[in-house]
Image (cartoon, rainbow, N blue to C red; front, side):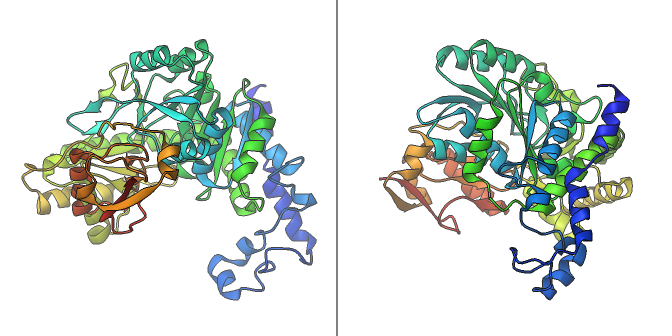
Length: 486
């Protein structure tokens, strides 16, 4: 297909067009939702607007059905696949959590092994709880200065494949939350040579498909499936996502897996936002993401000139565990000014009205995308400079490492459903955890079901709580107690 044909096709937005036609039909609704185009809930209509409420509708023949699309949703999926270079694309309304879980559930069943890095999003391990697959962790290297986990080294993956020839899949983060990419093309080849699928969590990689001078995307690398958060860097509404598949994967089987857990009442607000955002990126992606890269590069230079901070980038690339770096990521190490990332995060929000993506023990992430402007970056840089001037402390005594190698005792499913008891945190040392503990964001578990609780992990949890990280996962909302296997 030449550029002119591609542009003509990608200029379409079938779900959007169908909803516009539906508006003009002035249909009398005797179906759900009960607000009846907003008339039944005037306060909500005033808050969200009539335009929004009038298209919050249920599936019907003119609008197709997400569970079994045959018309406008099917056309939107075909256009999405074409834009991303995939064999097929599924519109997902349960967030990329739903996409990731469908990806794992489509390839793994109870007792199957899957090779993956331990610094995955909780949605991956949740999928293992659901299907009973066994994780074979490739523990990533840690950058000792930054305290962050890196990508998977080629030899680590090759070793895991050699030692587990019966594994069914290899899963790769592309990129990590901090923008670090593994050698995805080489890992895909290793997986395929061993008869395994290669899956990619591209929650933070939408722009790889549309920008120039970006790390390779999963579909371009030959991966079999990829979960893509269009709402993160692609501009669609929160909770909207896309699941991509390659030629080696059965579309019908994946659709059946998706329909096991995804709602039968797909939101047309979310689906139309995916449709319109895909059109925008296909037609203007190179231009807008080039602007994002320029903004990120400018911000890195300005922040590093402040002193004390380290806004890291492509200089970290080593050809293996950091095979490539996402140039749009504005990740900043804060430990040298004597503040944990979460402390800088709180100061930016509470004193400067600046909301960044997250702060952890040693770093912050300002998420740059298609809606940002240079003047807002100037405000961020100025605030960081003032925080350094006003709050700089001796960094002695600050923890630095974000990632702790786990000791896996049993599978996530076995531990999650086992008989358990609740113990005070410090009394749980040496026991096997039966639930998740994590800072959110980024949602990478500190502890997962089936892992041994160590003193180092308990120290980290208490330190993260003290510094103000938002801790989630356990049944106990205050995280004073933790569930362990009896």
